[in-house]
Image 1 (cartoon, helix red, strand yellow):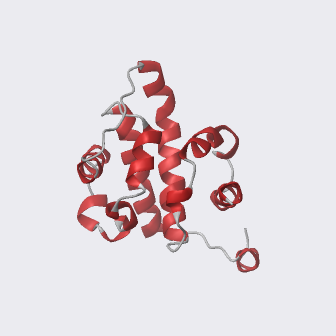
Image 2: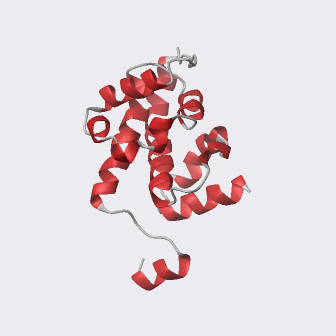
Length: 150
């Protein structure tokens, strides 16, 4: 996409530094399933309400850790909530890429538009959008999800 297209859309792509933050959060979301066997939709619905999600990009000591460590820190931040387990091994393996993508989209969106209220997003809708949107341009995917939110 050209620079003029970016100006027309009013959107931008994130820098490499910001992408490392997005990837760190996405990796932690994958770890929620693969290492902790927890339901990604339940987890994301609760983590979106937390301060750590909204301030993740300024938490250098958090996002520079391994995915499993970041997931542990995130879980500690929402320890007052009970997160559903995923007991079926096939779901854990099959949903790992979905969890990564969901985390990627949400953190990208947070960094792209920090004033947007992501707590109104239907996490289940995001989950089911994976098949049709995971290969799409990230800005397009966010635009589609924004339209669904309204």
